[in-house]
Amino acid sequence: MPPTAETPNLLTTNRKALTINLDHNIYGTFAEIGAGQEVARHFFKAGGASGTIAKSLSAYDMVVSDAVYGKANRYVSRERLMQMLGHEYRLLLERLDSVRGDNTCFFVYANTVAVANYKGGNECHGWMGIRFQMAPHADYNDIVLHVRMWDKTAQAQQDALGIIGVNFIYGACILNKNPDEFIPSLADNLGVDRIEVDMLEFAGPAFPNVDNREMSFKLMQYGLTNGVMFGPDKAVLQPSEVFHRKALLVERGSFRPITKLNIDMFECAGAQFIQEDQNQGEEVLQLLEITVNNLLADGKLDMADFLARVDTVTSLGYSVLISNFSEYYRLADYFRRYTQKTVGMVMGLNNLFEVFNEKYYENLPGGILEACGRLFKQGTKLYVYPMRGDVFSQYLRHRAGTSEAEKRESKNAGFLITALNVQFAAHLRNLYRYLLDNSYIVPIEAHNADLLKISSHDILQRLRRGESGWEGDVPADVVDQIKTKKLFGFGTEHP
Image (tube, rainbow, N blue to C red):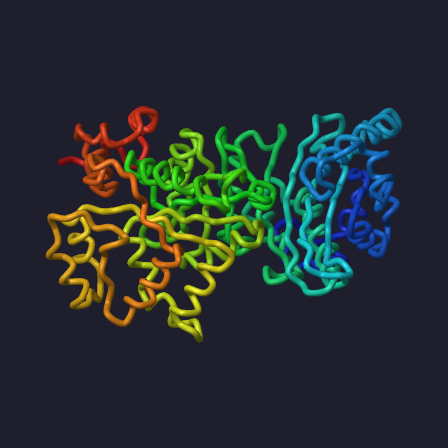
């Protein structure tokens, strides 16, 4: 019995390649530069490759690659991938459309990849794309993804690339109508420990209703990546290209909705960040980050709520990162994959207390000391915004496991609590003082006192009840979106 779209997980890599080879309506080109002909090799080995492969080529030498596809700023990049897809697809139609176009769905598969080099230490990643027709003479569709290899050797990485390439082509040709089958199938016969897919994008007439932000989030749901990134105009971004050689300033929050307090924190921290000696003349990327834990309600994701947060944040011109890193040190590790420049994390005092909450580090052999070592390495800093004493006291009352030292802090309700005067439990004070004295923790000096009263939780409750008065605490463009599109449950609850 031949394999079907309903049983993709039962297929070996060889069987997937053979299934495509035996479908003589699917015909096209394989163009692979960088790591070698790993994907085409599987189709040749499976048998019947003449039914699928019109041409297979490798332009390994950079001069040859430029001669074929033109110049590119980076050879392992989306720019180069799209040059390859465009060039090869045009040639394919010019040469074969008049001959067999009436009964053929043409495709071009391309990749540009860097595996572990001889010296080691290079970034092991690549871009894969397929341009394909769903019917003879139809307009083309594109699916593009970015992969990161975690195997230690070049040979193992090449093996993984070959497998995911076959999965990708099979998914595009057979599973393209069902993302919930297509996306997890990328890891078939491979697993998520060997390779990461951190960007996925669909385009073309076959995908009129696909929101690529939802597809990217599904990568996280199925364990294929730990972080996805979006920009304005619903753009799906690839972190390594966006973060490359940039200093980063990031603020974590729920942004439900984003408030003027969130923006003031970010702007005041940014004014200090760019004045740091190590950041003089550097390109600084500012982004907001939402951890998956902040997206889940009752343990389930509300996709409409997720998209509302992304839309409102990006409408203000910010990029947004969605990650599954609860701990800040893991978020810092993630950024250090892509840049060695300064990373600044903006937070309020409530989040600072969570950084020093030892329960999060019980799984680390070195406990909080190990977490701090990983968080503050290579120039990472925390920029801490002040908090009104009464608001801070309210936070402490709701915080589980409040110590006696922290309870004493709640008596200072009439004062402004800052990173300079906040008090931690006795056994953490010397550690905190060390980090503060050495500028790993930086008090945000400027602030707008009128905004310190803002609570996003209170705003959310009021807008859901359809009450007025919250609008002044939220950017005007976001207020308009909330009311026009009924975001965040606007007006759905009765007082």
